[in-house]
Length: 117
Image (tube, rainbow, N blue to C red; front, side, top):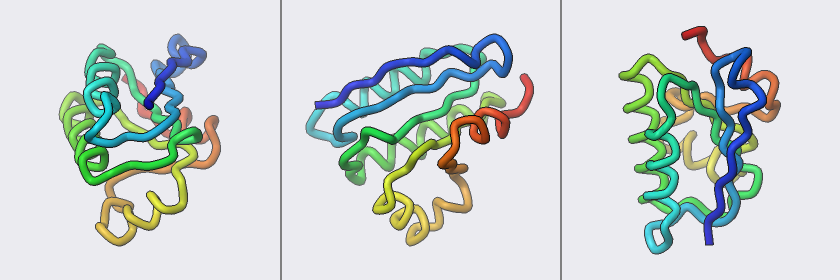
């Protein structure tokens, strides 16, 4: 099961939407398509993905994260990751994605890291 909710507290001041995620980002559930629809459906906003409730991310899920990052970056928007589980941080380090993805433990720091649009 995968659940995603939005938090628009920073929308007016920083043009940022935070997606709080819970469950598993895996190919066998609807997480990948749901995540893609939510991220790509936000026009002209920076996105912060809060992994605080994520249990598992499979290779297809990592591929979707790369796709989200690439698409948003080409549109001049930022994608930040918040509260990423240690096993996923380890995977990012092993694959070199840690030099691409911006991860934060603190929500305020993640918001402030987004560029002005």
